[in-house]
Length: 482
Image 1 (cartoon, rainbow, N blue to C red):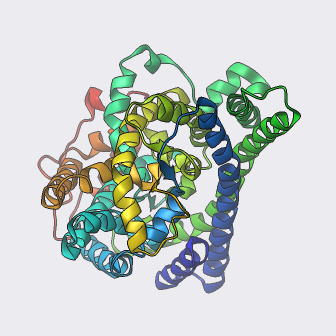
Image 2 (cartoon, rainbow, N blue to C red):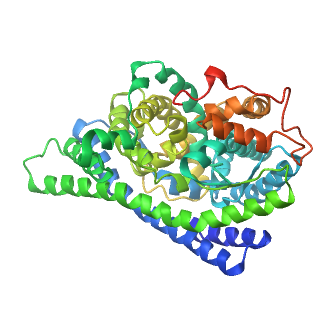
Image 3 (cartoon, rainbow, N blue to C red):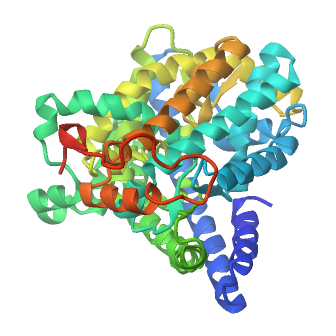
């Protein structure tokens, strides 16, 4: 059914379970479906325009890159078709999530069933290399554990930055990149770049009307178009393509926030109703509804960074020695790459692009290394390769840090490393909660509020919600932008 049909049905049933009025639940659920359709239309517009430009830029150089980027839709289809992993991953993860919520391990209920394909994707790659179904499921569920813990960690910052009360983001693409971005951002912040004010408001204040999102999109589209057709700038058809790219990118900058606004119009009243229901009956228990990071990608910093990183990614694919990735459809997936970085970097576009550029280096090599496994998995799932020798999906999720850890090292070691990372973050969240929430981008006030809500009292579960002292001081290691 796809996310635009499946998620509204799930949200509607959950709303009824939490005693939300039937008509209110129905209206909100339909709006959520409409919002996802609108978001997919805009992302499709972005993909349709950027993929030909990327291929044109590479053709100008004469370089041949063997691993074709087929994008996340193909990766998801392949993931759900490998050894019935996708079929089993859904009930197994749901059961695991419910148990972990009941015992107090997580505050997140991940209802974004469509995006369980990320867990099946990792599991499928492991299955291709081990032919061991149990190892594959275990590694896939380990990624599920990681995104739950990451969602709990980033939830206060997401709620504060995006005005999404009671919502967390356990997204298999966004969460690994955000966690990997934290130490990179810390390092970038120590350089002169850390003093540059480059959030959307600062840019607009500096450049006036030319700093508005539509002009930013227009400029980026024109630059990419000119780079793609640099060998044919005296041909009229080239300028048609260049101008189309400019207007299309301006359209993405202007329309995407509107589509996310429609989705949030449906989501906000439901999330507030569900949280009120929970807090009225379980005063010591916090809960967050886990959703797709698509609800975040309308932020101007996300869109601007995503457009700016496109030519950088293409150039890097050309100049990085040993890279096999030929960019295509996944260039339109960069909003999901950047979504959870906004709170960490306070919406600073320069920091986001620099951090993203650094992450692109391992991304190219991980997705190149994964390409043979993914191609083999596609054959196993009956996916039509269309004559391609190798396929990959560099952003989602073939180049993800999670894929590098869980799919490219021996399965037992990957399982152990993954569990150590998950438990390390979990223990840190309960030992230094205020500090951890601030590292993920929450303000000191928001972090303290979350500590009081989550980490005092019994918490409603078997596991402790606080380890050690009840007082946690963020100190100088908290959010540097405050």
